[in-house]
Amino acid sequence: MTVKELFKHVGLQCVEWGQAVPCFEPGIYIVSNSADADMENTAPVAPVFNDKMIQSWIDRLPAFTLDGVKPTVESLKERLAEFWHLTHFLHLQATKTI
Image 1 (cartoon, helix red, strand yellow):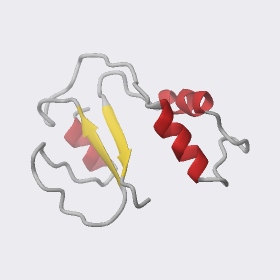
Image 2 (cartoon, one colour):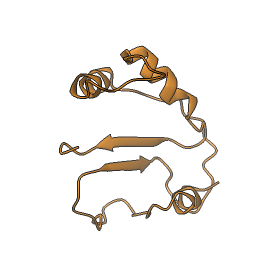
Image 3 (cartoon, helix red, strand yellow):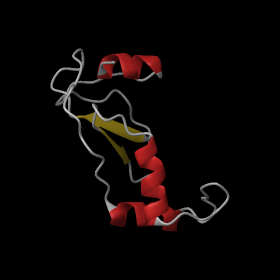
Image 4 (cartoon, helix red, strand yellow):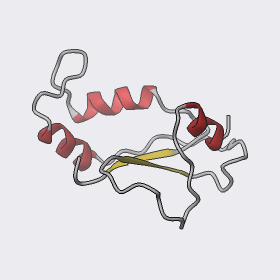
């Protein structure tokens, strides 16, 4: 599956690097390492997490639970890694207003 196909499948718009994102609302953006959104990416990439950012996320959301339990950085990283597609690196980043 290509990045463009994945985005279309979940109802997201694909914007090329350097183009303005046509949205002015807070939210989450995703960055892919694919040079071409129409091509399959076959280079496996392991997930990379920012522990400080994850801890900050957990700290800002006191009601946030994972399987009914307040997550640790490690437990949240493990869960996020379960959804990792090994041939597409997708970087998720929240805007500060979320």
